[in-house]
Image (cartoon, rainbow over all chains, first blue to last red; front, side, top):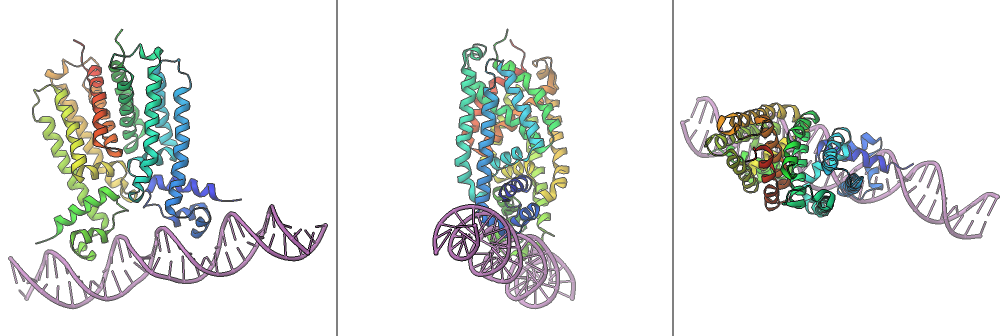
Length: 194
Length: 194
DNA sequence: CAAAACCGAACTAACGATCGTTAGGTTGTA
DNA sequence: TACAACCTAACGATCGTTAGTTCGGTTTTG
């Protein structure tokens, strides 16, 4: 009977679209259908609410990423990696969770900058590591140029962020255009020519 | 003797670091060394102040970009394009103008979203066009793969945003790592193999 | 088994602080 | 004398937060 999950969901939505300072507890409470002080039955402060939502989101995304990358390690890695970008573009358009996470990784509330980064850095580090591990599997690494898995992984993350950047400030369709353009470039750049 | 330029400079700094909602007129006035209502001698509202600063920044950056791209069209284009990314990384670290512009292109104040985008879209469109024009010059286009200037330009913008993304949420040094990794990939991907 | 104590989730009322903004006065300069 | 640039004082609205209450459902107890 508790509205706690509803509060978290609405907070996520508003934080994603208005930012931390732009989303007020009053508007969050209104959208949930409760009174503003009722939020304090579940969270010690606005910052506490934010951090709870942020941690939850980080946890879910980490799980999703891991699952996607390890789903079928035998497939050509280009396919897996390209589909991951497409999936993130879809998610960014349809669910607020991805928008929230991206926004707060780029520009966390300045008072919480250090706390947020302490959560985000291991997240990114593990993502990079998981990616390198995938590319280092013999099936894949023997198709890579001698520069190796590390370079291919780092370059991929750059491509990913570049495409998502366009998804953020314009539309999914224009981001898809970018992916079409850069993907063959990326593949030619990291694979051994046949 | 007017403090108008000082107001704009300080507003730029605070908007860049705290966001539109996070930066209050009171703190801006404090940093300038005047009283809060004095701001209204020069700007009709907080939104007006923001838009003035934003337009000025857009104008300056547009001029800088154009100058950089057209500085020496005979040089190998890879050199010009790579240096542009390095320059933007430097700017992002040293001057608030670049941080401000990036932040507000990604996440404009939600009440001003449409107005901001009406300014930003032509800016991006012209940047893309200028880039394509550069790459279509025979000196450069004859070194490009048959996919052509359009693909190379779009891929470049993706690389640029991907590297800048890392500069935003971590440091210049880590962004430089990304550039090191992706630049040879990009060049192999767009240039004809010798 | 019924009464009592407890607890969590919501509420109302209100706090002080700060927000953006307006009105109106002072002062120095053209 | 007129105007621009600043000032003080204050506005209503909203911010995040606290105090204290009510109410329904568990758990503990006589």
